[in-house]
Image (cartoon, rainbow, N blue to C red; front, side):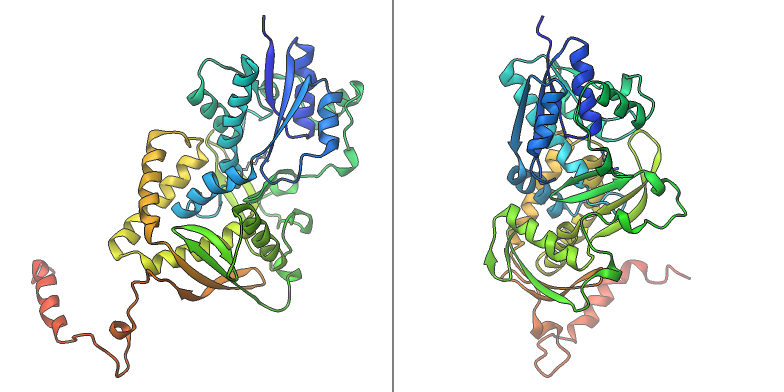
Length: 393
Ligand code: ARG
């Protein structure tokens, strides 16, 4: 019987223990590592997978695909879950799952596996995506079944089996990182009254320690996609990396919230998304300039729904596809340049320009250049208010 399983491998403790645990149960484990910008899968992580018993380690650089096919559509939809989470982790899961399925097909494996717990959203995102693409694959989730009750027990198991784990570098938090952001949870954050300590700042400076002088940056968009910084063209990945560095220096893009998970529990989460926050601010302001009133306001109404679908692992569903088609249509006008000011945790658009701008100074001005026919307003209001005349008495 073919017992090959392709495991979504991160290099951390859980997935390293997964490799051994699956091997002990008769599986031939292929460790699949996706580079979504969490830092290059290190030689150390690859060696760790092998030491844990992986028959093979496969690494794919998915950064470009992640940014252009996952982050850009979410940015254009203005997807922010429960008003505070830019969905970095949530966006990466369907991408990783799709590649997991692809690797399984190429190797003729009959199963895939992940290292998610039974309490989180990531298991939902992985499994729904895998089953959408290939319901014939079995899905193994060792962490949901195994006997270990604490990280200490996992560390003991790793030590017993010669899996090199760097205990000294162990963070007191559970951290997931990619180009679009960093998710930080557990540890002291589980006490809701506790202010996130300094060591929860993972990718950005705290506003207190941020640069003392403001920085300005211009972001150029072409049909909704960010393409230029300060007038210079950038590739999608380089653009996000550059804005992450700039935003980090100015403490941009932190949020601390109580979040409603798919499985029904509330959890405390801290997020950092410097580039995403800057781009979202810029993109929203661009749309205010180029979209007509009906389109702009209708589109605002679907942002929360889009975020909910991404969060809930429903990336490959018909409704999400339909919303994508709508959002894509709205981006035909989204070309222009926004100038932003970054300072001590805040990021504001201070200048706007677009060849598709709907702003007409001769209509908006209160100066002598005014070309707006003020007398026309009288008749307009008469008819506009007609349905309600006398009805409020
Ligand atoms: N709560 C966030 C989400 O559902 C972050 C999950 C982070 N995952 C992790 N393994 N730490 O998207």
